[in-house]
Length: 40
Length: 566
Image (cartoon, rainbow over all chains, first blue to last red):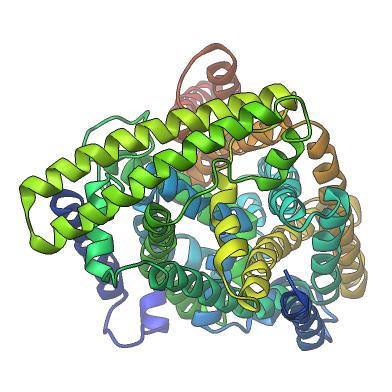
Protein backbone atom coordinates (compact mmCIF):
# COMPACT_ATOMS: atom_id res chain seq x y z
CA UNK A 1 0.00 0.00 0.00
CA UNK A 2 1.51 3.37 -0.96
CA UNK A 3 2.13 6.04 1.61
CA UNK A 4 -0.22 8.34 -0.27
CA UNK A 5 -3.11 6.03 0.47
CA UNK A 6 -2.21 5.83 4.14
CA UNK A 7 -1.56 9.50 4.84
CA UNK A 8 -3.32 12.28 3.04
CA UNK A 9 -1.49 15.59 2.87
CA UNK A 10 -3.07 18.60 4.54
CA UNK A 11 -4.81 21.22 2.34
CA UNK A 12 -4.10 19.45 -0.96
CA UNK A 13 -5.52 16.16 -2.22
CA UNK A 14 -2.12 14.86 -3.27
CA UNK A 15 1.47 15.25 -2.08
CA UNK A 16 2.55 16.19 -5.60
CA UNK A 17 0.63 19.46 -5.15
CA UNK A 18 2.96 20.39 -2.29
CA UNK A 19 5.98 19.53 -4.44
CA UNK A 20 4.70 21.66 -7.29
CA UNK A 21 4.06 24.49 -4.83
CA UNK A 22 7.68 24.29 -3.69
CA UNK A 23 8.97 24.42 -7.28
CA UNK A 24 6.66 27.27 -8.23
CA UNK A 25 7.68 29.30 -5.18
CA UNK A 26 11.36 28.73 -6.07
CA UNK A 27 10.76 29.77 -9.67
CA UNK A 28 8.90 32.91 -8.57
CA UNK A 29 11.73 33.80 -6.21
CA UNK A 30 14.33 33.36 -8.94
CA UNK A 31 12.31 35.64 -11.22
CA UNK A 32 12.04 38.25 -8.45
CA UNK A 33 15.76 38.08 -7.69
CA UNK A 34 16.57 38.36 -11.39
CA UNK A 35 14.35 41.42 -11.61
CA UNK A 36 16.13 42.97 -8.60
CA UNK A 37 19.55 42.20 -10.09
CA UNK A 38 18.76 43.75 -13.44
CA UNK A 39 16.65 46.68 -12.27
CA UNK A 40 18.64 48.10 -9.37
CA UNK B 1 28.07 45.83 27.14
CA UNK B 2 26.48 46.99 30.34
CA UNK B 3 24.67 45.13 33.11
CA UNK B 4 21.37 45.08 31.16
CA UNK B 5 23.09 43.27 28.30
CA UNK B 6 24.72 40.73 30.60
CA UNK B 7 21.41 40.08 32.40
CA UNK B 8 19.58 39.55 29.11
CA UNK B 9 22.33 37.35 27.70
CA UNK B 10 22.70 35.07 30.72
CA UNK B 11 18.97 34.93 31.45
CA UNK B 12 18.22 33.88 27.87
CA UNK B 13 20.89 31.18 27.92
CA UNK B 14 19.90 29.91 31.36
CA UNK B 15 16.23 29.74 30.38
CA UNK B 16 17.11 27.74 27.27
CA UNK B 17 19.14 25.23 29.27
CA UNK B 18 16.56 24.90 32.04
CA UNK B 19 13.70 24.63 29.55
CA UNK B 20 15.49 22.02 27.47
CA UNK B 21 16.39 19.92 30.47
CA UNK B 22 12.99 20.19 32.14
CA UNK B 23 10.81 19.69 29.05
CA UNK B 24 12.63 16.56 27.98
CA UNK B 25 12.83 14.81 31.33
CA UNK B 26 11.78 11.20 31.44
CA UNK B 27 13.34 9.58 28.39
CA UNK B 28 13.80 6.01 29.56
CA UNK B 29 13.95 4.17 26.28
CA UNK B 30 16.21 4.50 23.28
CA UNK B 31 13.38 5.58 20.98
CA UNK B 32 12.52 8.38 23.38
CA UNK B 33 16.14 9.47 23.76
CA UNK B 34 17.19 9.29 20.12
CA UNK B 35 13.92 9.95 18.29
CA UNK B 36 11.84 11.84 20.88
CA UNK B 37 9.25 9.05 20.69
CA UNK B 38 8.50 10.33 17.21
CA UNK B 39 6.24 13.00 18.63
CA UNK B 40 7.17 16.16 16.74
CA UNK B 41 4.62 18.08 14.67
CA UNK B 42 5.71 19.35 11.25
CA UNK B 43 6.42 22.93 12.35
CA UNK B 44 8.78 21.74 15.08
CA UNK B 45 10.50 19.45 12.56
CA UNK B 46 10.89 22.45 10.22
CA UNK B 47 12.29 24.75 12.93
CA UNK B 48 14.64 22.02 14.08
CA UNK B 49 15.96 21.43 10.57
CA UNK B 50 16.49 25.15 10.02
CA UNK B 51 18.14 25.68 13.40
CA UNK B 52 20.49 22.74 12.84
CA UNK B 53 21.68 24.05 9.49
CA UNK B 54 22.02 27.70 10.51
CA UNK B 55 25.00 27.76 12.82
CA UNK B 56 26.39 30.85 14.52
CA UNK B 57 28.70 31.32 11.57
CA UNK B 58 25.61 31.86 9.39
CA UNK B 59 24.55 34.84 11.48
CA UNK B 60 28.01 36.22 12.09
CA UNK B 61 29.49 35.97 8.65
CA UNK B 62 26.57 35.99 6.19
CA UNK B 63 25.79 39.70 6.74
CA UNK B 64 29.52 40.34 6.45
CA UNK B 65 29.55 38.35 3.21
CA UNK B 66 26.83 40.61 1.78
CA UNK B 67 28.63 43.70 3.08
CA UNK B 68 31.83 42.79 1.22
CA UNK B 69 30.62 40.85 -1.77
CA UNK B 70 26.93 41.53 -2.34
CA UNK B 71 24.05 39.05 -2.23
CA UNK B 72 25.13 36.47 -4.82
CA UNK B 73 25.75 33.93 -2.07
CA UNK B 74 21.96 33.38 -2.08
CA UNK B 75 22.27 31.24 -5.22
CA UNK B 76 24.10 28.61 -3.21
CA UNK B 77 20.74 27.63 -1.66
CA UNK B 78 18.70 27.27 -4.85
CA UNK B 79 19.23 23.51 -4.96
CA UNK B 80 17.71 23.08 -1.50
CA UNK B 81 13.99 23.10 -2.42
CA UNK B 82 14.65 20.51 -5.14
CA UNK B 83 16.43 18.32 -2.60
CA UNK B 84 13.46 18.62 -0.22
CA UNK B 85 11.09 17.29 -2.89
CA UNK B 86 13.31 14.32 -3.72
CA UNK B 87 13.82 13.39 -0.08
CA UNK B 88 10.12 13.77 0.76
CA UNK B 89 9.33 11.26 -2.00
CA UNK B 90 12.08 8.74 -1.25
CA UNK B 91 13.94 8.97 2.04
CA UNK B 92 11.17 9.99 4.42
CA UNK B 93 8.70 7.15 3.81
CA UNK B 94 11.53 4.63 3.57
CA UNK B 95 13.15 5.62 6.88
CA UNK B 96 9.77 5.70 8.63
CA UNK B 97 8.65 2.38 7.22
CA UNK B 98 11.88 0.65 8.28
CA UNK B 99 11.66 2.29 11.72
CA UNK B 100 15.37 3.11 11.69
CA UNK B 101 17.14 5.25 14.30
CA UNK B 102 19.84 6.39 11.90
CA UNK B 103 20.23 6.79 8.16
CA UNK B 104 23.07 4.21 8.15
CA UNK B 105 20.87 1.54 9.77
CA UNK B 106 18.87 1.55 6.54
CA UNK B 107 22.03 0.70 4.59
CA UNK B 108 22.31 -2.67 6.31
CA UNK B 109 18.82 -3.69 5.20
CA UNK B 110 19.66 -2.65 1.67
CA UNK B 111 23.30 -3.77 1.49
CA UNK B 112 25.17 -5.29 4.43
CA UNK B 113 26.85 -4.51 7.71
CA UNK B 114 30.20 -3.46 6.22
CA UNK B 115 28.58 -0.81 4.00
CA UNK B 116 26.58 0.47 6.95
CA UNK B 117 29.72 0.62 9.10
CA UNK B 118 31.72 2.35 6.34
CA UNK B 119 29.08 5.08 5.87
CA UNK B 120 28.73 5.49 9.65
CA UNK B 121 32.51 5.79 9.95
CA UNK B 122 32.67 8.48 7.25
CA UNK B 123 29.89 10.36 9.02
CA UNK B 124 31.56 10.15 12.45
CA UNK B 125 34.77 11.49 10.96
CA UNK B 126 33.29 14.47 9.18
CA UNK B 127 30.72 15.39 11.81
CA UNK B 128 33.01 14.67 14.75
CA UNK B 129 35.55 17.17 13.53
CA UNK B 130 33.01 19.73 12.43
CA UNK B 131 31.35 19.81 15.86
CA UNK B 132 34.62 21.24 17.14
CA UNK B 133 34.44 23.99 14.57
CA UNK B 134 30.76 24.64 15.29
CA UNK B 135 31.84 25.43 18.85
CA UNK B 136 35.14 27.10 17.95
CA UNK B 137 34.13 29.58 15.24
CA UNK B 138 31.56 31.54 17.29
CA UNK B 139 33.74 31.20 20.41
CA UNK B 140 36.56 32.94 18.59
CA UNK B 141 34.44 35.90 17.56
CA UNK B 142 32.65 36.15 20.92
CA UNK B 143 35.84 35.88 22.95
CA UNK B 144 37.29 38.69 20.85
CA UNK B 145 34.25 40.92 21.24
CA UNK B 146 33.71 40.21 24.95
CA UNK B 147 37.42 40.05 25.76
CA UNK B 148 37.06 36.57 27.28
CA UNK B 149 39.67 33.85 27.14
CA UNK B 150 38.92 31.70 24.05
CA UNK B 151 39.13 28.42 25.96
CA UNK B 152 36.73 29.68 28.62
CA UNK B 153 34.29 30.78 25.90
CA UNK B 154 34.55 27.37 24.25
CA UNK B 155 34.04 25.63 27.57
CA UNK B 156 31.06 27.85 28.33
CA UNK B 157 29.23 27.14 25.06
CA UNK B 158 30.15 23.45 25.04
CA UNK B 159 29.09 22.86 28.63
CA UNK B 160 25.73 24.61 28.28
CA UNK B 161 24.90 22.51 25.25
CA UNK B 162 26.14 19.33 26.85
CA UNK B 163 23.88 19.77 29.89
CA UNK B 164 20.57 19.67 28.09
CA UNK B 165 21.61 17.45 25.18
CA UNK B 166 22.95 14.71 27.47
CA UNK B 167 19.97 15.04 29.77
CA UNK B 168 17.15 15.12 27.25
CA UNK B 169 18.48 13.74 23.98
CA UNK B 170 16.72 14.60 20.76
CA UNK B 171 13.62 15.96 22.46
CA UNK B 172 15.71 18.53 24.37
CA UNK B 173 17.41 19.47 21.11
CA UNK B 174 14.12 20.02 19.26
CA UNK B 175 12.37 21.80 22.14
CA UNK B 176 15.17 24.31 22.58
CA UNK B 177 15.73 24.84 18.88
CA UNK B 178 12.28 26.34 18.31
CA UNK B 179 12.99 29.07 20.87
CA UNK B 180 16.54 29.52 19.72
CA UNK B 181 15.43 30.10 16.14
CA UNK B 182 12.74 32.55 17.27
CA UNK B 183 15.33 34.52 19.26
CA UNK B 184 17.73 34.37 16.32
CA UNK B 185 15.34 35.65 13.64
CA UNK B 186 13.78 38.23 15.97
CA UNK B 187 17.18 39.57 16.96
CA UNK B 188 18.47 39.71 13.39
CA UNK B 189 15.41 41.60 12.15
CA UNK B 190 15.73 44.09 15.01
CA UNK B 191 19.38 44.65 14.09
CA UNK B 192 18.45 45.19 10.44
CA UNK B 193 15.69 47.64 11.37
CA UNK B 194 18.12 49.52 13.62
CA UNK B 195 20.54 49.92 10.72
CA UNK B 196 17.69 51.20 8.56
CA UNK B 197 16.25 53.64 11.12
CA UNK B 198 19.67 55.12 11.81
CA UNK B 199 20.04 56.16 8.18
CA UNK B 200 20.00 59.95 7.82
CA UNK B 201 17.82 62.27 5.76
CA UNK B 202 14.69 60.12 6.10
CA UNK B 203 16.03 57.70 3.54
CA UNK B 204 13.25 55.34 2.56
CA UNK B 205 13.51 51.61 2.17
CA UNK B 206 13.34 51.88 -1.63
CA UNK B 207 16.06 54.54 -1.72
CA UNK B 208 18.34 52.39 0.44
CA UNK B 209 17.60 49.43 -1.84
CA UNK B 210 18.34 51.48 -4.95
CA UNK B 211 21.57 52.81 -3.46
CA UNK B 212 22.74 49.28 -2.65
CA UNK B 213 21.92 48.28 -6.21
CA UNK B 214 23.82 51.20 -7.71
CA UNK B 215 26.85 50.13 -5.68
CA UNK B 216 26.70 46.61 -7.05
CA UNK B 217 25.50 44.82 -3.94
CA UNK B 218 22.22 43.49 -5.32
CA UNK B 219 24.03 40.98 -7.52
CA UNK B 220 21.58 38.22 -6.63
CA UNK B 221 21.55 36.20 -9.85
CA UNK B 222 24.47 35.34 -12.12
CA UNK B 223 23.36 33.44 -15.20
CA UNK B 224 26.82 32.52 -16.49
CA UNK B 225 27.46 28.76 -16.69
CA UNK B 226 30.55 27.99 -14.63
CA UNK B 227 30.31 25.03 -12.27
CA UNK B 228 33.62 25.89 -10.64
CA UNK B 229 32.16 29.18 -9.39
CA UNK B 230 29.76 28.44 -6.57
CA UNK B 231 28.10 31.85 -6.92
CA UNK B 232 26.00 31.40 -10.01
CA UNK B 233 22.54 29.95 -10.55
CA UNK B 234 23.74 26.71 -12.16
CA UNK B 235 26.23 25.88 -9.39
CA UNK B 236 23.49 26.62 -6.94
CA UNK B 237 20.86 24.49 -8.66
CA UNK B 238 23.06 21.55 -9.70
CA UNK B 239 25.98 21.54 -7.25
CA UNK B 240 23.72 22.70 -4.46
CA UNK B 241 21.19 19.95 -5.22
CA UNK B 242 23.81 17.24 -4.72
CA UNK B 243 25.18 18.89 -1.60
CA UNK B 244 21.76 19.26 0.02
CA UNK B 245 20.65 15.75 -1.00
CA UNK B 246 23.69 14.45 0.83
CA UNK B 247 23.32 16.76 3.80
CA UNK B 248 19.60 16.23 4.37
CA UNK B 249 19.38 12.64 3.16
CA UNK B 250 22.53 11.03 4.47
CA UNK B 251 23.84 13.19 7.31
CA UNK B 252 22.44 11.97 10.61
CA UNK B 253 22.47 15.49 12.10
CA UNK B 254 19.56 16.31 9.74
CA UNK B 255 18.04 12.84 9.30
CA UNK B 256 17.68 12.64 13.09
CA UNK B 257 15.66 15.86 13.03
CA UNK B 258 12.92 14.63 10.71
CA UNK B 259 12.94 11.05 11.93
CA UNK B 260 11.48 12.57 15.10
CA UNK B 261 8.34 13.56 13.16
CA UNK B 262 5.02 12.12 14.36
CA UNK B 263 4.39 10.53 11.01
CA UNK B 264 5.56 10.50 7.41
CA UNK B 265 3.24 13.43 6.70
CA UNK B 266 4.67 15.54 9.55
CA UNK B 267 8.28 14.77 8.53
CA UNK B 268 7.50 15.56 4.89
CA UNK B 269 5.79 18.83 5.71
CA UNK B 270 8.72 19.80 7.90
CA UNK B 271 11.09 19.30 4.96
CA UNK B 272 8.74 21.04 2.53
CA UNK B 273 8.42 24.10 4.73
CA UNK B 274 12.18 24.16 5.15
CA UNK B 275 12.32 24.29 1.33
CA UNK B 276 9.79 27.14 1.28
CA UNK B 277 11.44 29.21 4.02
CA UNK B 278 15.17 28.66 3.69
CA UNK B 279 15.88 30.79 0.62
CA UNK B 280 13.79 33.77 1.87
CA UNK B 281 15.45 33.43 5.28
CA UNK B 282 18.90 33.63 3.69
CA UNK B 283 17.72 36.60 1.64
CA UNK B 284 16.71 38.42 4.84
CA UNK B 285 20.04 37.67 6.55
CA UNK B 286 22.00 38.81 3.50
CA UNK B 287 19.85 41.92 3.20
CA UNK B 288 20.62 42.82 6.80
CA UNK B 289 24.26 42.89 5.69
CA UNK B 290 23.24 45.22 2.85
CA UNK B 291 21.47 47.55 5.31
CA UNK B 292 24.66 47.65 7.39
CA UNK B 293 26.56 48.44 4.19
CA UNK B 294 24.22 51.35 3.35
CA UNK B 295 24.44 52.50 6.97
CA UNK B 296 28.21 52.70 6.67
CA UNK B 297 27.96 54.99 3.65
CA UNK B 298 26.71 57.63 6.09
CA UNK B 299 28.54 56.62 9.25
CA UNK B 300 32.24 55.95 9.58
CA UNK B 301 33.00 52.25 9.31
CA UNK B 302 35.99 50.93 11.22
CA UNK B 303 39.06 50.63 9.02
CA UNK B 304 39.41 47.11 10.43
CA UNK B 305 36.37 45.46 11.96
CA UNK B 306 38.20 43.19 14.38
CA UNK B 307 38.82 45.96 16.89
CA UNK B 308 40.55 43.71 19.41
CA UNK B 309 43.19 42.59 16.92
CA UNK B 310 43.74 46.15 15.75
CA UNK B 311 44.19 47.28 19.36
CA UNK B 312 46.89 44.65 19.78
CA UNK B 313 48.64 45.89 16.63
CA UNK B 314 48.47 49.44 18.00
CA UNK B 315 50.65 48.35 20.91
CA UNK B 316 53.48 47.59 18.50
CA UNK B 317 55.85 49.75 16.48
CA UNK B 318 53.31 49.79 13.65
CA UNK B 319 50.92 52.00 15.63
CA UNK B 320 51.99 55.20 13.90
CA UNK B 321 51.55 53.78 10.41
CA UNK B 322 48.15 52.36 11.25
CA UNK B 323 47.08 55.71 12.73
CA UNK B 324 48.21 57.53 9.58
CA UNK B 325 46.24 55.12 7.43
CA UNK B 326 43.19 55.64 9.65
CA UNK B 327 43.45 59.41 9.16
CA UNK B 328 43.53 58.93 5.41
CA UNK B 329 40.56 56.57 5.71
CA UNK B 330 38.63 59.22 7.67
CA UNK B 331 39.29 61.83 4.96
CA UNK B 332 38.11 59.39 2.28
CA UNK B 333 34.99 58.77 4.35
CA UNK B 334 34.12 62.48 4.34
CA UNK B 335 34.14 62.42 0.55
CA UNK B 336 32.16 59.18 0.55
CA UNK B 337 29.51 60.63 2.86
CA UNK B 338 29.08 63.69 0.67
CA UNK B 339 28.88 61.58 -2.46
CA UNK B 340 26.40 59.20 -0.79
CA UNK B 341 24.11 62.15 -0.11
CA UNK B 342 24.50 63.21 -3.75
CA UNK B 343 23.55 59.72 -4.84
CA UNK B 344 20.44 59.70 -2.66
CA UNK B 345 19.52 63.15 -4.01
CA UNK B 346 19.92 61.91 -7.58
CA UNK B 347 17.84 58.79 -6.84
CA UNK B 348 15.07 60.96 -5.39
CA UNK B 349 15.07 63.19 -8.49
CA UNK B 350 15.25 60.08 -10.70
CA UNK B 351 18.04 61.86 -12.55
CA UNK B 352 19.80 58.98 -14.30
CA UNK B 353 22.76 61.11 -15.42
CA UNK B 354 23.48 62.29 -11.89
CA UNK B 355 22.95 58.76 -10.58
CA UNK B 356 25.53 57.43 -13.01
CA UNK B 357 27.97 60.20 -12.09
CA UNK B 358 27.55 59.59 -8.36
CA UNK B 359 27.79 55.85 -8.84
CA UNK B 360 31.14 56.21 -10.61
CA UNK B 361 32.45 58.50 -7.87
CA UNK B 362 31.28 56.08 -5.19
CA UNK B 363 33.01 53.20 -7.00
CA UNK B 364 36.27 55.13 -7.10
CA UNK B 365 35.96 55.99 -3.42
CA UNK B 366 35.21 52.34 -2.63
CA UNK B 367 38.40 51.31 -4.43
CA UNK B 368 40.39 53.84 -2.40
CA UNK B 369 38.86 52.52 0.81
CA UNK B 370 39.67 48.96 -0.19
CA UNK B 371 43.27 49.91 -0.86
CA UNK B 372 43.62 51.60 2.54
CA UNK B 373 42.03 48.62 4.29
CA UNK B 374 44.45 46.27 2.49
CA UNK B 375 47.36 48.32 3.71
CA UNK B 376 46.00 48.29 7.28
CA UNK B 377 45.66 44.51 7.08
CA UNK B 378 49.26 44.25 5.88
CA UNK B 379 50.45 46.35 8.81
CA UNK B 380 48.46 44.25 11.27
CA UNK B 381 49.83 41.05 9.73
CA UNK B 382 53.34 42.44 10.05
CA UNK B 383 52.72 43.64 13.63
CA UNK B 384 51.23 40.33 14.76
CA UNK B 385 52.69 37.47 12.72
CA UNK B 386 50.15 34.72 12.07
CA UNK B 387 47.17 36.98 12.75
CA UNK B 388 44.05 36.35 10.67
CA UNK B 389 43.37 39.64 8.91
CA UNK B 390 40.07 38.59 7.34
CA UNK B 391 37.58 40.73 9.27
CA UNK B 392 34.37 39.98 7.34
CA UNK B 393 33.10 37.86 10.28
CA UNK B 394 33.32 40.88 12.57
CA UNK B 395 31.41 43.40 10.43
CA UNK B 396 27.97 42.57 11.81
CA UNK B 397 28.89 41.95 15.43
CA UNK B 398 30.94 45.17 15.58
CA UNK B 399 27.95 47.08 14.19
CA UNK B 400 25.76 45.48 16.90
CA UNK B 401 28.20 46.31 19.71
CA UNK B 402 28.64 49.91 18.55
CA UNK B 403 25.22 51.05 17.42
CA UNK B 404 22.51 48.98 19.02
CA UNK B 405 20.98 50.20 22.29
CA UNK B 406 21.78 48.35 25.50
CA UNK B 407 19.48 45.45 25.99
CA UNK B 408 19.43 44.70 22.29
CA UNK B 409 23.18 44.09 22.37
CA UNK B 410 22.58 41.42 25.00
CA UNK B 411 19.79 39.98 22.85
CA UNK B 412 21.98 39.84 19.73
CA UNK B 413 24.76 38.15 21.62
CA UNK B 414 22.16 35.67 22.85
CA UNK B 415 21.34 35.17 19.15
CA UNK B 416 24.91 34.17 18.37
CA UNK B 417 25.19 31.87 21.37
CA UNK B 418 21.77 30.35 20.60
CA UNK B 419 22.74 29.62 17.02
CA UNK B 420 25.96 27.97 18.16
CA UNK B 421 24.10 25.89 20.72
CA UNK B 422 21.31 24.91 18.33
CA UNK B 423 23.68 23.45 15.73
CA UNK B 424 26.03 21.90 18.25
CA UNK B 425 23.22 20.12 20.11
CA UNK B 426 21.99 18.54 16.86
CA UNK B 427 25.46 17.44 15.92
CA UNK B 428 26.14 15.94 19.33
CA UNK B 429 22.82 14.12 19.28
CA UNK B 430 23.51 12.70 15.82
CA UNK B 431 27.04 11.62 16.75
CA UNK B 432 25.66 9.87 19.82
CA UNK B 433 22.92 8.16 17.77
CA UNK B 434 25.36 6.85 15.19
CA UNK B 435 27.95 5.81 17.78
CA UNK B 436 25.34 4.05 19.94
CA UNK B 437 23.20 2.44 17.25
CA UNK B 438 25.48 1.83 14.26
CA UNK B 439 28.67 0.93 16.08
CA UNK B 440 28.11 0.11 19.76
CA UNK B 441 24.72 -1.64 19.71
CA UNK B 442 25.20 -3.28 16.32
CA UNK B 443 28.75 -4.57 16.62
CA UNK B 444 30.06 -4.29 20.18
CA UNK B 445 27.28 -4.97 22.75
CA UNK B 446 24.20 -6.18 20.82
CA UNK B 447 22.31 -7.89 23.63
CA UNK B 448 21.78 -5.26 26.30
CA UNK B 449 18.51 -3.72 27.40
CA UNK B 450 17.07 -0.34 26.43
CA UNK B 451 18.19 1.35 29.64
CA UNK B 452 21.79 0.35 28.92
CA UNK B 453 21.68 1.88 25.43
CA UNK B 454 20.13 5.10 26.74
CA UNK B 455 22.97 5.36 29.23
CA UNK B 456 25.50 4.58 26.50
CA UNK B 457 23.94 7.29 24.29
CA UNK B 458 24.30 9.82 27.11
CA UNK B 459 27.95 8.89 27.58
CA UNK B 460 28.54 9.16 23.85
CA UNK B 461 26.89 12.61 23.81
CA UNK B 462 29.10 13.79 26.66
CA UNK B 463 32.16 12.18 25.08
CA UNK B 464 31.65 13.88 21.73
CA UNK B 465 30.99 17.20 23.52
CA UNK B 466 34.31 16.90 25.34
CA UNK B 467 36.02 15.89 22.09
CA UNK B 468 34.48 18.92 20.36
CA UNK B 469 35.70 21.26 23.09
CA UNK B 470 39.20 19.76 23.04
CA UNK B 471 39.33 20.03 19.28
CA UNK B 472 38.14 23.64 19.49
CA UNK B 473 41.01 24.48 21.86
CA UNK B 474 43.45 22.77 19.46
CA UNK B 475 41.97 24.72 16.56
CA UNK B 476 42.95 27.83 18.46
CA UNK B 477 46.57 26.79 18.15
CA UNK B 478 46.44 26.06 14.45
CA UNK B 479 44.22 28.27 12.32
CA UNK B 480 44.72 26.06 9.28
CA UNK B 481 42.98 23.24 11.07
CA UNK B 482 39.69 24.94 10.33
CA UNK B 483 40.39 24.87 6.64
CA UNK B 484 41.18 21.17 6.78
CA UNK B 485 38.00 20.36 8.64
CA UNK B 486 35.90 22.22 6.07
CA UNK B 487 37.66 20.26 3.40
CA UNK B 488 36.97 16.94 5.14
CA UNK B 489 33.24 17.52 4.73
CA UNK B 490 33.67 17.97 0.99
CA UNK B 491 35.83 14.85 0.79
CA UNK B 492 33.18 12.54 2.23
CA UNK B 493 29.77 13.89 1.30
CA UNK B 494 29.87 12.81 -2.34
CA UNK B 495 30.72 9.21 -1.53
CA UNK B 496 28.09 8.97 1.20
CA UNK B 497 25.52 10.39 -1.21
CA UNK B 498 26.55 7.90 -3.87
CA UNK B 499 25.99 5.03 -1.43
CA UNK B 500 22.54 6.34 -0.54
CA UNK B 501 21.52 7.05 -4.13
CA UNK B 502 22.51 3.50 -5.04
CA UNK B 503 20.55 2.26 -2.06
CA UNK B 504 17.38 4.19 -2.92
CA UNK B 505 17.25 3.99 -6.68
CA UNK B 506 19.68 1.48 -8.11
CA UNK B 507 18.60 -1.99 -6.99
CA UNK B 508 20.98 -3.52 -9.55
CA UNK B 509 23.96 -2.56 -7.36
CA UNK B 510 24.50 -4.93 -4.47
CA UNK B 511 26.57 -4.73 -1.29
CA UNK B 512 30.05 -5.79 -2.42
CA UNK B 513 29.87 -3.61 -5.53
CA UNK B 514 28.83 -0.50 -3.63
CA UNK B 515 31.41 -1.08 -0.90
CA UNK B 516 34.30 -1.36 -3.35
CA UNK B 517 32.92 1.54 -5.41
CA UNK B 518 32.74 3.74 -2.30
CA UNK B 519 36.37 3.02 -1.43
CA UNK B 520 37.43 3.75 -5.01
CA UNK B 521 35.36 6.96 -5.05
CA UNK B 522 37.17 8.12 -1.92
CA UNK B 523 40.48 7.37 -3.60
CA UNK B 524 39.44 9.45 -6.63
CA UNK B 525 38.35 12.36 -4.43
CA UNK B 526 41.61 12.26 -2.49
CA UNK B 527 43.50 12.24 -5.77
CA UNK B 528 41.49 15.28 -6.94
CA UNK B 529 42.26 17.04 -3.68
CA UNK B 530 46.00 16.38 -3.57
CA UNK B 531 46.90 16.46 -7.24
CA UNK B 532 44.35 18.58 -9.12
CA UNK B 533 42.71 22.00 -8.93
CA UNK B 534 39.13 20.77 -9.19
CA UNK B 535 36.74 23.04 -7.23
CA UNK B 536 35.41 21.65 -3.93
CA UNK B 537 31.79 22.03 -4.93
CA UNK B 538 32.36 19.43 -7.64
CA UNK B 539 33.62 16.81 -5.19
CA UNK B 540 30.05 15.95 -4.22
CA UNK B 541 29.11 15.26 -7.81
CA UNK B 542 32.33 13.42 -8.60
CA UNK B 543 32.14 11.18 -5.53
CA UNK B 544 28.50 10.39 -6.17
CA UNK B 545 28.95 9.66 -9.88
CA UNK B 546 32.00 7.45 -9.29
CA UNK B 547 30.16 5.34 -6.70
CA UNK B 548 27.22 4.83 -9.09
CA UNK B 549 29.20 4.21 -12.29
CA UNK B 550 31.89 2.03 -10.69
CA UNK B 551 29.21 0.27 -8.64
CA UNK B 552 27.37 -0.62 -11.84
CA UNK B 553 30.56 -1.81 -13.49
CA UNK B 554 31.65 -3.97 -10.58
CA UNK B 555 28.16 -5.46 -10.21
CA UNK B 556 28.16 -6.28 -13.92
CA UNK B 557 31.44 -8.15 -13.51
CA UNK B 558 30.23 -9.93 -10.38
CA UNK B 559 27.02 -10.99 -12.13
CA UNK B 560 28.96 -12.37 -15.07
CA UNK B 561 31.26 -14.34 -12.79
CA UNK B 562 28.29 -15.73 -10.89
CA UNK B 563 26.66 -16.72 -14.16
CA UNK B 564 29.82 -18.48 -15.32
CA UNK B 565 30.15 -20.25 -12.00
CA UNK B 566 26.60 -21.53 -12.20
